Image 1 (spheres, rainbow, N blue to C red):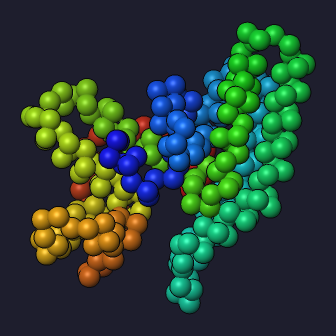
Image 2 (cartoon, rainbow, N blue to C red; image 1 turned 90 degrees about the vertical axis):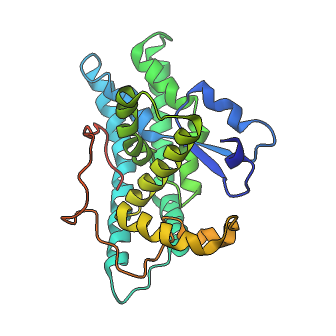
Length: 263
């Protein structure tokens, strides 16, 4: 993490309100903290049985945010699938940022207005609904911030889904052999998860990556490595989709999330 923070490529980190992250956003870090709407929603989701009215209303307001994200995701897919349209990622990020500014900001205003009014109406600091509301109010600026960045998702569900098999597996694996082996495993897990995130077949991607790395020397520059990042890689042979029959089946189960998927 220290090496990553020293680069000029990391602009923001999306996370929950865990205090252990606070040190990353100190004075001079240059990093923006972007909060996760899935975590904010979960606070109300957990109150469905005990406080059905308030929890349902809060989740309905949050669902409107996810509806916008789902519609934008469908629009992006249409653009990517259109052979007559040369999809440009940077242009899409700018377009999504503008769409959010037009459609999402009023929804955010409505949600946080309800939070303040409901908190005042209840008036009991230890009330479970007030605690759920405070989770959002304490991070209002961070929860609003995704609107300002078209490249950022509404939540970090994708990241959490990608590391869930590791969180389950580490209880069984126990050992990696050595510190160096653990670092190598972390690199490979990161590459595989990123490849899956961008719709690549990890095996095809890694095989091509290993072959081409041989020609870059012992200490390739960032400029040399950039074309091989999962979101920019273009294989000389068409990469098989993840659903292809020869794609290895996942070793560990991935429990279904109870949260809405923004796409």
